[in-house]
Amino acid sequence: MKRTTFNAIGGWQPLLFCVGMYVVALFFSIFVCSSIFYAFNARSAAKAAEKTALISTAKPQLASMNP
Image 1 (cartoon, one colour):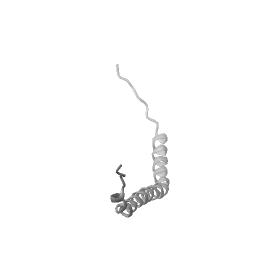
Image 2 (image 1 turned 120 degrees about the horizontal axis):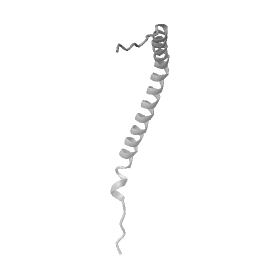
Image 3 (image 1 turned 180 degrees about the horizontal axis):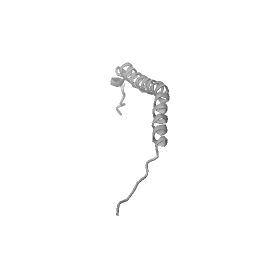
Image 4 (image 1 turned 135 degrees about the vertical axis):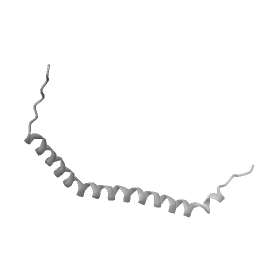
């Protein structure tokens, strides 16, 4: 009987490990950077929404229909 071994994949192991670690680090860096970005921009977006809410409630507009 002939045994099959995976000796060829042993040479690729360091490369595959580095590629895998790069992908994981890239995923976490995107997650962390986007979290920080949205944490800082949430305040300015909330202020803009508050200003538009104040403007829209300050002047009530009445609808009229002409028969």
